[in-house]
Length: 119
Image (cartoon, rainbow, N blue to C red; front, side, top):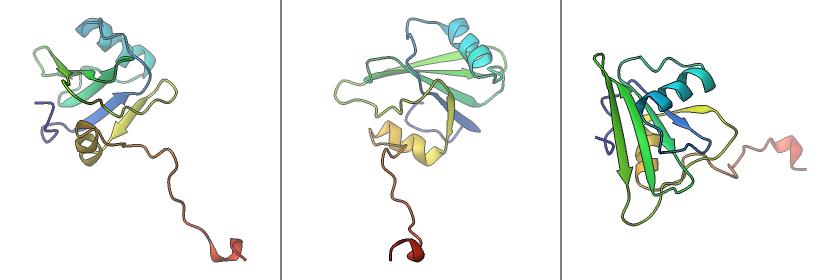
């Protein structure tokens, strides 16, 4: 389920560190009170990562209850973007990059340069 994001309308990452000992209610409260998002929207995946980047949790409301997903990598780690505490919406392509261990938010993005600024 966590390797394919095709069934989700939106995907959000909690970019700050999350205590992964939290259960469904604790993660839902983070979504509601920290990010001012509705955890009870169907087909929205919320992802959380702790200090150890080899494991993540996902939370999805299915209409009749929450689905709690947990993934631990045996080798490697997720390249989790760490910014201020926010919910970062990502695209399905960025999600695939994340699941492959690739960086989804460039630290030093290449910027377009205007010719009048060069000379």
